[in-house]
Length: 479
Image (cartoon, rainbow, N blue to C red; front, side, top):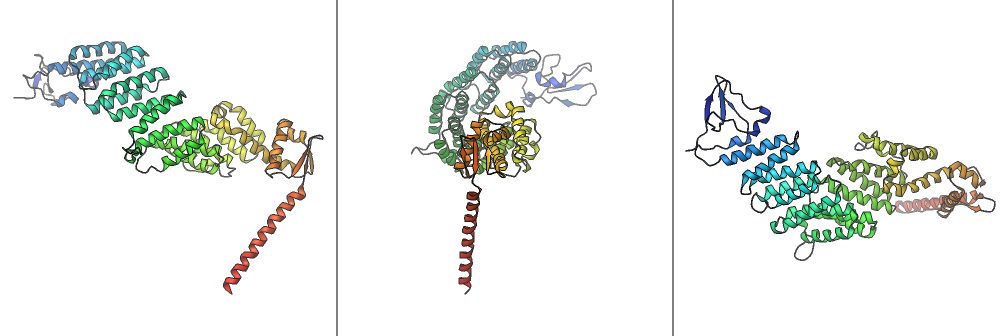
């Protein structure tokens, strides 16, 4: 009959350190495992050990498991202070184990993490391959899936791309027989992200095809029951087309992703999709749509705690300036807390200079914060357009009192070369921002104020005629 051992032992017995109670069971003088200890007349006290929830019979054959458990927890206690000793100690767990089981699996998991921390990557890979042999029968399917996911997340912080690739490919090879679809999907997604980062788009497309096939019905259509997984695939594919600047395919895929209603997506996934949508709209000159997408992306990143929110806030500011909005983007409740963030401050000051048409201050901020602003290739891609906008506004204000003005004078005021001034003037004349002509021989801009005034009067006349027509229509209805 099974019963819990509870014995009175001498008062000079010192219980184990409470911080390390999980390392071992206290034992009496005969070596019996105790569930509780009574010291003299002291109050009965239970030890809060997870292992103590089990009750061992006096004649059961459970002592080897207890030894394994003790060895595992003793090894784990060494992990922080003496990782090399911990590795040797975890090896003893494997030696004690004999047949593959839970404690050996746990020991290997710890050995992988320790070797990663010690940058002993070859040994780490050997231990990982050893651990993968346990997933077929030694541990439960759910536990192995959770553990491997944990390991993959742990090592994904590495900058060693080749190591990550080997890790993911080794996992996928082991999963061919395991038939674990969820883990296969997650590992393939991680490998796809790695190929995206390495700009290996051919390999990425192969991964995407496999992922799409796993989320299709027998008819070859997207299985909307797998909406969350589909959104993850779309997010990966959208990032690829964004990097390739393939707006045609990007637009179709972006619209498709927004129409999936069967999923409860992670905000990080929606942040990625919205950010790429914002980039697409900005490149197409649809600044208001870009502004909306960047704001949604920022909110999703903020909700998920992703550091990507700071970058997306910069893009939001960029879109705000390009749409020539007089509204400060930091007036919104969500963005206001980041107004004085060191990474954002340069963009905040840039908005202020831009809205005041202060070209000298604008260029000074760009120069002072060059790395903060210009290191981002997407921002760099659009800075020239911002400069052209602000120069155009300063130019219009500068030439307003004149009928003729020397181009070198404009060059000096705008702080750009004469050739750049001429290019800017040509653009302004072509889009009717300025009415005039360029005299290249004499380096003059001759302005046609009469034409500009005539255009204004034509517009007023058209407006008057429309009001008159509206008035007559109202009168005829009332008659």
